[in-house]
Image 1 (tube, rainbow over the protein chains, first blue to last red):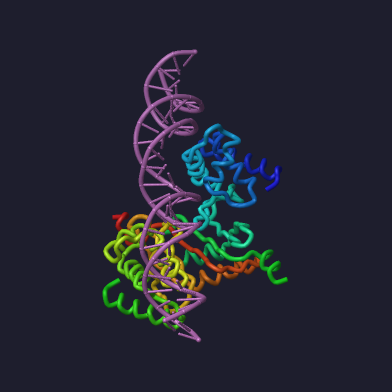
Image 2 (tube, chains in turn purple, yellow, orange, brown):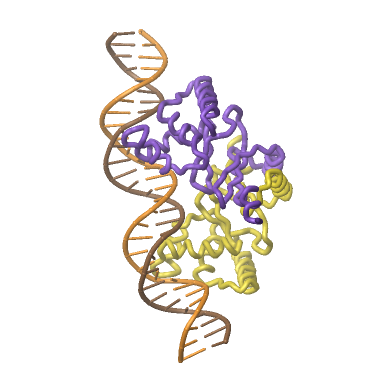
Length: 151
Length: 151
DNA sequence: ACGATTATGTTATATTGTTACAAATACACC
DNA sequence: GGTGTATTTGTAACAATATAACATAATCGT
């Protein structure tokens, strides 16, 4: 994400929190910012390292609390299969996304496929299951790496 | 899983490994057995505890190696969101499954929905992504717990 | 029987995440 | 503005999950 995008996203996050009556404190904003500036998912402890340039002696709870908040507000996502976190690409509307995770270059793409969402809904409805949090992470090879490997 | 089912599943696993020229050793079989007998997912360390009744001094690698093998052979699945493992319900054919995980009672149901598989395939194909391992875990409330809660 | 491969034993350590309690800050209300 | 309350942050210890490294043992093909 470039600088202009970051500024827009932070403004968006700010507005969202204001509207909801929750506080986007300095620490929370910093964590969000670090995630958005990174071009790859960051683990909690990578975030912890990077936070040293922002606060004096960050400890694990510092990060996990900020992450908990941001996850609740839908501003970041957790990638369960990587134990890592990414900034949400579309924080302005609630959504169930899917993640395409390239195990070659590490690139992660967030997509929102309505057809996937629909079929998941149908499958769970068929057995009376009420989904609160759908986790969809596809591990594989991105287009770029596939092409490169075939050369 | 009841005893008869377990015997069938172990025989099936045995045959599969034979066919593939890989070894289903005592330890591996024990881990598979423990997972299949459990009515809920087990963490690696729960397995480790239970293995004490089978081998003298099991250490983490004992379990993780067995799990690695069983995962490779498709005999067990890992639930990324729970850090836990379950015996595969249909080991005899390769498949991409989805898991419905009840966060109330802990029940996990493995389903194989072709419509979900298809839409995931379409979504990834659209961006040139080649999926090797699809992870689909729906966290929510199972039918039984939903009904109970409404009473 | 021999050498090579595969599996296991053992110790230590890395990584990820939580608990518990104290101090500080922000907020609502008077 | 002061006061009590709720929220956020600081800090230390620890729990849970997973891997590394290297030694020993079992198995397999020849």
